[in-house]
Length: 343
Image 1 (cartoon, rainbow, N blue to C red):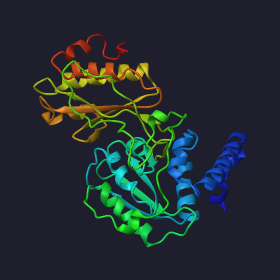
Image 2: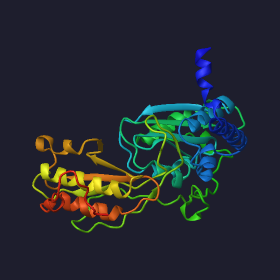
Image 3: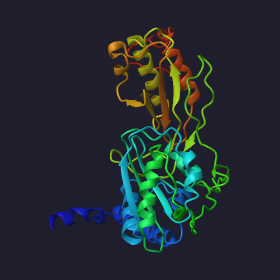
Image 4: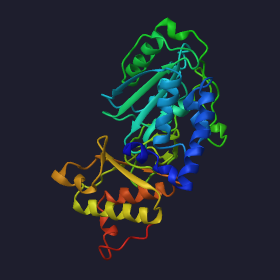
């Protein structure tokens, strides 16, 4: 009894009660459409920020599993997939089943996409090693069959980089790709068919020349679904951009310069988050880049920015490049606890 009361506490306030009512209304509407359309397409076009966190996690279970009876296959990725959007053309040929992919992004939480649409799949960015990927396969209003189970498992193999032979039974059916509009009706960000997949949202990151950062393009991602760490999930994240270490070693001075540059950026853009990566792994403490002298001349440290209304990324890249060179001292002037005004 106590447990049931705790679960109903949200109804004790007007705001909580209204939020539950809105969720129920949206669930009923989406549930009806999902019987004749791809759930990921519906949510992608809806672009509703309120449909995030555990609310979308509930929809996946309620609609795909309980209502429509989809088959699901999951795996922790054993390899890195730099450009999953390239797989969309192959998935679009699978007309026998409806597909939804759900990827647990380490920063943005759980993202979902129709893997037949390159414009949605590109929102995953690069798939990281050891992160969870789930593929749902079904036939919308019709009962799932063995073809759905094999399609989900085969899709996981493709995401993992395996060469697979597509069974002829997967190629015949009515689940073709329809034109999908990005949130807000921006048709410039759509993928229309298996024959003409959408362009990649972001090219594979490559080291950039010293003092010559290009203006980054913001990568739009599918509506975030759930996160285990935060209720305020970003809807946008840039691709990763590489900063090449110009010093003989990325030493303590470079570390301090980077810390002050990032602090200055966050002071100007408090709603944005800067993520740093080295050798494909996220760096939670910049100081760790200095330990044991593991980051040497010519190494590439990557960064990305997440949040809404992303700004000053090119300038941030320029400052980080200088901070990784012998000119790092320019960022160390002034009191230690003062925030630099760089942006």
